[in-house]
Length: 179
Image (tube, rainbow, N blue to C red):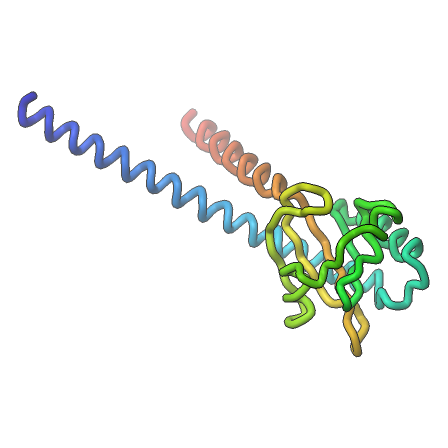
């Protein structure tokens, strides 16, 4: 192999490696940007949920709380969960009343702890309850003395589909410009 071939091979490998690394970094940054946009939208929806639901402690039964969570979840096209200040779940738009009664305490969930301590919090994690990766946003309800938590969540595949749609849209736009 001659010197020109070696130089060409070296330049080719360096360019391929740098393009691959650039792609990985760009995809990661794009995913993070979309994740933050979804969190921002969930925060807005959570504010509306608080205005609609008010103080969760005012609901007399789990059935009443769950009916409101179901209604708000349907309106928001998202999963809505009502969690008392002690971590007990009293409403969830994806669960029926019997499932709610057997749901484990949520006081150790990251988004719950952040919302209790800071007014709101978010995290993306696996849901043991519905066995799916979700992006959660939690916020305090209107109870000033002992705030409860209203949580809204969407599947992480929203993020994956948003990234895919964005990439498809960019490719379609590039194709039109090439014509």
